[in-house]
Amino acid sequence: MNTSATPPHPRSLLYTVYFIYFFCGLTLCFEGAFNPEFKDYFQLSYQQQMYTMFAKNIPFVLAVGIGFLIPRLGYKNCLTTGMALFATGTLLLVPGLQSGSYAVVLAAFFIIGLGFNFQLVAGNPLLSALGPADGRSSRLNLGNALGAIAQILGPVTLTLIIPVSVVTVQGKLPYMKGLFTAIGALLIGTALLTLMVRGVDVSASFRSPEAATPGSASARASWLQPKLLLGFVAIFLALGAEAGLFGLYRNYLEDPQIAGLTSHQSQRMFTVYFAVFACGRLVGSAVQKKIKPASTLVVGAIAALVLLGIIVTGKGALAVAAVTAIGFFVSIFFPTLYALAIEGLGEQTAKASGLLTMGFLGCAVLPVLQGWLADRPGLGLQHSYGLSFLAYLGVLAYAWKSWERRPETSQVP
Image (cartoon, rainbow, N blue to C red):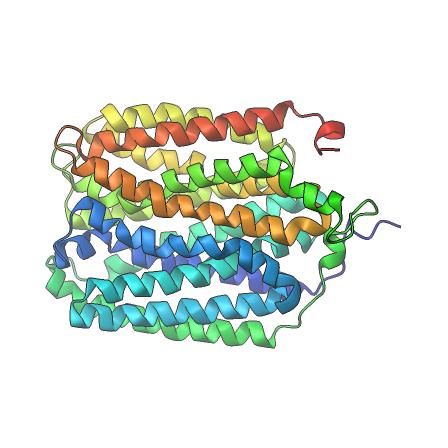
């Protein structure tokens, strides 16, 4: 009897995971939306500004360890831990701004990243397991799309609570501190919510009749599968490039040599960017129910490469359109790559999830490298986006290989 097709699960847990993705996406957006303000307030270079990305994503070096802890702690308990860490880091941003200490702010982002780490290592396998196996990629895209939808609300909220007349960083500080305090309190409530939701054993969802016993040569061999290891590399590159787009988006629009938008205009366009990003994930979630995920990934990677060429060379409205539209295509990269990489891993899924989630280290490394390139007099901010060509070529190569792979040969014997 096949128990993995439609595993039993309480809908409340699935809906709670969806809510967590939504609310944590909102939280991360607020932090990213203030990158230019952090730069001005702490007198930073582009590279130093991107240290927030480094601090938030370097904890993903622990993702494999968390993957090994999941069988002992349980998926739901890991979600609770993640939400508690998320709340702690967000609240720590307030004294960091109050004291004017960039070190405290970076420590806050590190704790936030650790919470995000727990959320994804536990949350992605839950989305994968809580439903029919053939809907795995669709649920992952939907869960991540909810986070993107929440990120639309972030910039909109900022334009509503921060008056247009407030243009200086000092004027915005009270609003920023109040916002982080409120979000921290809501994250504490979210952690309590995960405690009240009934847990479920999803281990059967990752078990197949051919699954190897833990510690056997066959089980260890799963870590040697090129599909998994190359999936990690592709996720590392894709997320690193995406973090650069996200972290420097407003800087790009406000650069007088590119588009020259005002701070208020770039804030509004940030909303449009996330609307396009969310739309891409929602469309991807729907399309992948009928079309092979690898096929959608090939199309998305090619489109991203074309738009990237415009981002590096365009000016004015054309540049604004390209750097915004690219979000539609890159939005499906992480959830789709993740779904392709864990396919067929059986009981090794939790550990594989840890390895793949460690791909968020790309968000720590590539944005800092891009910031360093942006500070170079001979390159500048616009040409620093050329670094992403490498990332999207890597995604295209992995997608093409997955597309070519026949179902009967998709697993390493």
